[in-house]
Amino acid sequence: MADSREHEQREFLEALYHEMKWKLLYYARRHLNDPQQAEDAVQNALVVACRRVDMLITHEKPQAWLMEVLRRTILDMREKIAEDFARNSGDSEIIQGVHYDDYHVAEFSDLLDPDDFEVIEKTIVQRWSLKEVAENFGISEEAAKKRKQRATKRLRQNYFEEFEEKD
Image (tube, rainbow, N blue to C red; front, side, top):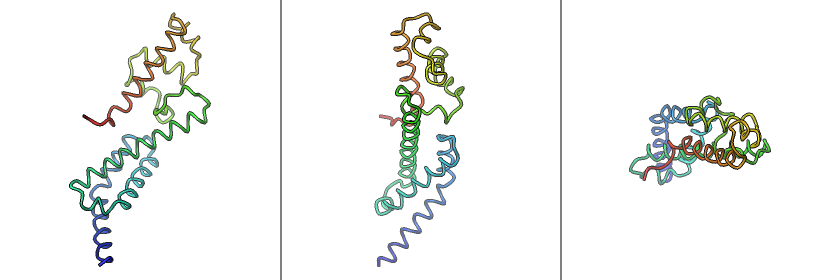
């Protein structure tokens, strides 16, 4: 009996994998610029599916469940990338959750208005001090600090917007 159950689970997982593999890879590659990271994310999601096969096999929408696992896996990977980068760069003010090395800096310009983008580019990428940013914009250091905080917040919101759960 256990053999037939294991066989049924294996067949279910194989069929689900073959049905979803290209969709999973496409989704992961859209959200992770590195193809190897995208494949790792898909593999990690499939490991979760294998571990939870008893629940997954009876789930009403196993495809949606697997996509949600992949989405969360990608979020975890992005967070880890940002944490590793912040730890290794020594920059305690790095944008948590966004790792600019994974993207061309120009791609951020699509997520922010020009002033916000300039603040992020100068403080994070070019490593300008807040004093230098203040002088460049003709504002106080405190205003430069607030501008950077608001720009960072907007970047995080825009960057993760597609992953937020709809209420």
